[in-house]
Image (cartoon, rainbow over all chains, first blue to last red; front, side, top):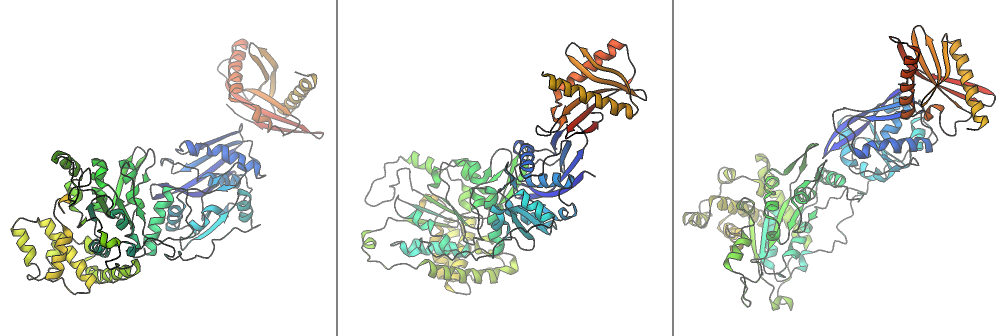
Length: 511
Length: 118
């Protein structure tokens, strides 16, 4: 019988499919055919596999070799099937025993000398293999630590084809992942909130944003410290849960930026795409197989758009869907992929093209028309989702001379944020939410309603037309977060007043 | 072509013929030359006309004998077969194309027969 089958996992976006690799060897003129919708890089596997088998000392059959990747109708791409193809052929040649291959998921690219090379996307592949009931998986040594993050499946790493063949024939062992080291603590993380001086109000705003998961915008003159503040947001966000960290690592794995994860990084990520970024770079895309964009790389972390108004209008508008649903759906000719994209949005912008508007001692040189064109770039629907608008004033001389109090350190702020998030999730878990920013208006005004006395100011603003109903809800959300931070059971007039000031006006630049 | 290689080719074809006769084939023609090449062996078994391409090797250093049979050679074999049929006025006959690899090594002759290669 010269028929054999092995298994691997194909990825489309983050979605895995188990791929069966069948080999049939028949007595015919020598040929090597790969069928099952392979793309260009996968078609070249025939050359790699033939050389790897020969140079590992197994030889290659002088017969007709047909390899089928099933399901045959699913388009397949990449070099990660090389190893599964080679082992399928070796099994059909009866060089390696077939029964051992039944519950084994095989991932890896082959070099011409039979060595194994690491491939992107191993983490989501192994997660899918476990879900589909495979008991073990072999992968290149370079991917071993990444694959080892997945619990509940035996993960083995190999340096080359020969060592796997020996292992299958019970003549050798493969490497197991090292003991899982906890991600190194924030030690050496240089960015600390205490480094921000003279911006106490903005720092408080940042802490509120962190505690409630509120999207926020900062408007101010160049050099006021907007970027500095934004970069310190991750340092006051709670560490990711294991599940969240795995989701993030899976996205980074297919983004394939060459970095190899050694252990599970529980730090929330910070993505700051440049304002010249294309829409595809921002939300994901690319030809053929879609790849995750900045919004997905910032999953469970922070997406910071510096000079937000310099981004192309339609790029900013493309943020609407992920802001709404927490994921992006990208359609390409080859199919559609969904990537998670639950991020906290931070915008920074100058008040006008020259950046000097609103400063006491400098004159803005922009025309009214120029300012209007500038501010129109951020559309209402995106602006609607931003709960906090902070006006960042330039730091005065006094602060530079050390005359002001130093603000809280990141560690102190983080402790407050964690406490506030616990209070919020205790209250909201029965509604199915975790953070104040997730709660929709009807719930805020209905079962989570707060006393009429506390709302007096807000009601008056609504009557006077100074705020919309949406702005009203935003104030309620913020008031809850402020109450959680202060350890108050329910927001009172004070908390609502602070919320109103943090919310700013409906016009971004009118803060 | 050197004499030694010519001799080897001839020797391989002789062995292939002996093998085919042993299998019950009836040899109709050998080294039938026509414009663009030659048919090594034409034989018949139970009404099926079989055109055989023979490749002989003394080692496997350059791959199996069959590795030398390329798509172009097969296409030529097909055209030659058509010419042969026209020439001999054979029609309405089942036709098959086979390849025979002969390995002459260390005083031993190994014959491998692939049927219906086209």
